[in-house]
Image 1 (cartoon, rainbow, N blue to C red):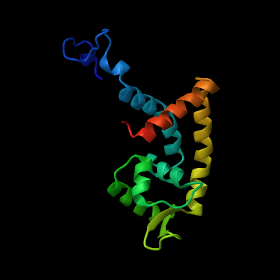
Image 2 (spheres, rainbow, N blue to C red):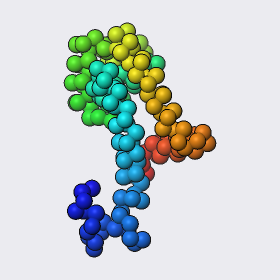
Image 3 (tube, rainbow, N blue to C red):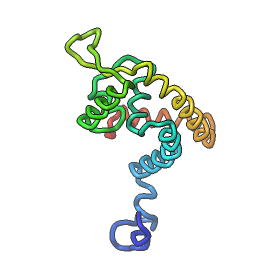
Image 4 (cartoon, rainbow, N blue to C red):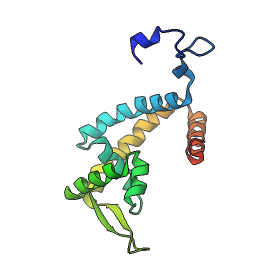
Amino acid sequence: MGVAAKGRSGDGARTAGGGRFVDDYLAYLLARASQEISGQFHQQVRAGGLSVPEWRVLASLSGGEGLPVGELAALILAQQPTVTKLVDRMAASGLVRRGRSAGDGRQRLVYITARGRRRVTPLLAAAKRHEGTVLARLGATDARRLKGILRRLIAAGGQ
């Protein structure tokens, strides 16, 4: 929100209590917290030689089985066509590979490669350290509660 927008009155930007609408709006608070927390870590991702979407793909594929592109798109918060192109580039650089599902040979999945795992493993450790630093500000009980609340919001689909 720009400086000019802060000083406006009578335009619906302020709440009944006089504060800005966004200062107490859940969607804004979640997005802003995510931006603040992620921004700090994304500097490390770029320093590690990956783009943020590449990091998200590799982190989503690490420690698990392959995923369909549609599910991967949902996990990395991107549109499926964008993720399809990203996966193609990542496959060309050897970070991921496409393959058939063992359970359903018709289904194509994206898998992390050994090269991708080598690239993402140090960043996974850095991400956990970063998360630990952020959550330490809340204390263990509030950190656990916050994650639980966020999981419930996600499961409810924002309804």
